[in-house]
Image 1 (cartoon, protein in one colour):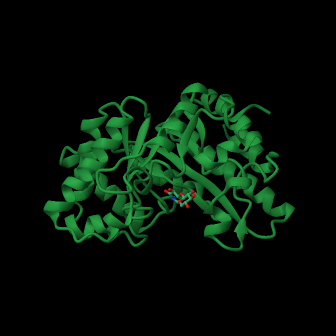
Image 2 (cartoon, protein in one colour):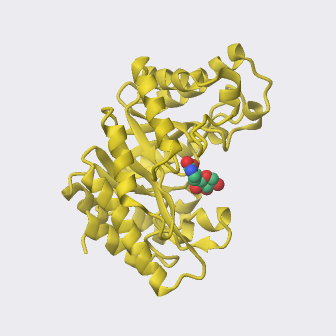
Length: 317
Ligand code: XIL
């Protein structure tokens, strides 16, 4: 079978990519496949560009981990989705537990976004400027940013990112946008408001953390097309499909079908630019520790052997 980035490009997409994380790079067999440009044309750093890693103390910046991913991507011919600038998780305590006013928090957001986006200016395909701003019921997540600044934190961050790195595509990224309902309705509404206000916004990321058998491709396509109708691009940014353990052979066949239908949907939506898996192998997946009892969510198994899901992806491109 054909390698997945090669297949994605042949299908008119920009990339097939994967998340990775700095500690995994010492795993030689893992790194060897990761480096293969025909297999992966894009990387997302799994952790080391997040706020807790990049500005652990106020105005103390550390880009060591992110720089390592950027260097690896450059050496192996891959583009990068920067992930992420503003999120309620993996924030340092000084942000989460600060006693903020709009006047004190806005410049903290601007400094964080400007400093990180400037450091990487010209090196990023895109930035997840805002990660997970919505609850599943479509209301705005009451994170420290929203509680202090209302939804203005979103435009503050997007404008700061655009000023720092005018060529990067600026995304809002979220989960559970894949099925119809209040969350995608709220995202469409948010995008319309940002566009009407002249705020730079270029894409919406559909994370794609699915449960086996719960992929609804026609809903996913409808939702992507609601976003692309607003002249934004979309991407599947964190795809994995978790299985309740132990996984049976039938489960792995269902997983193949599920991966295939997600990738087919991205292929069917011309402004869906690419698909990123949230790490390519079960050996380094976040799923078992975050969803106890679930696992085997990735297209390669713990031994780096291709699963049926791999063929599903290859066939869909
Ligand atoms: C996860 C990482 O994979 C883990 O290593 C970390 O402990 C927690 O975060 N949505 C996101 C990603 O946007 O940043 C998350 O990554 C997975 C869910």
